Length: 83
Image 1 (tube, helix red, strand yellow):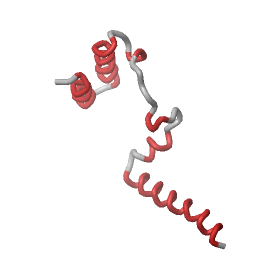
Image 2 (image 1 turned 90 degrees about the vertical axis):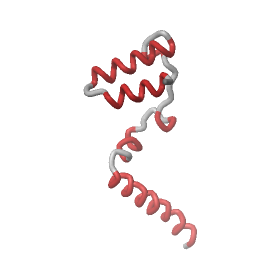
Image 3 (image 1 turned 90 degrees about the horizontal axis):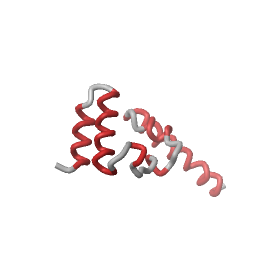
């Protein structure tokens, strides 16, 4: 079993924050022989401040609302240019 799959299984079976931390620490030790902070990483979406996109994904309602509002916002410039 790959280390990534093992990490996924451990994270899915974690019941509390301590178990999540242990799973991540074990993965880092196996990958780089060090701590979690030693692993190379990228921010989700390539943005350090990604709270908005992450919160939108928390629920179907938020995601649908965001899509509708993005479409509405996109119509503004079209209307201005066609006047």
